[in-house]
Length: 185
Image (tube, rainbow, N blue to C red; front, side, top):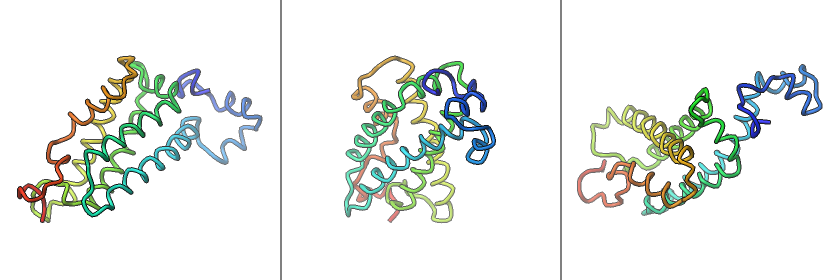
């Protein structure tokens, strides 16, 4: 149903009828139709996050390659749920889907930076948690915006999206050379 109409326009009654369950059964599992869609998307996004973060466990990870793989994974995820994303990222959408994706990316970035503090620019250790949280939030919002613009443009060129993502990331984040003193030792 979410691939045919906006999630916010789907009623619990419609969804329950389509699923062949009663409303009481629905409410045992979710508060609203968006939670059902959210659960399906988050399951798939969690698998993408696991794959992305597994690449950071190497002794000298190639972050540019990891980002390229993350872009391909994101595009595969979006294509799997293409119509839901098209409707959820439309100009008149309520922003819930964008917020969901932004929060997911932010959490992924927090995990990445916590496991790889060498990726952060040099700073006082007492500010580490703030830097991790604020940078992760910035990237979550920014990368979600890049995806929104790409989807709304009608482009299907993954290389264009990858280029936009890599161009949007701070240079310090893509560097694997910590000898320049720009990273936490």
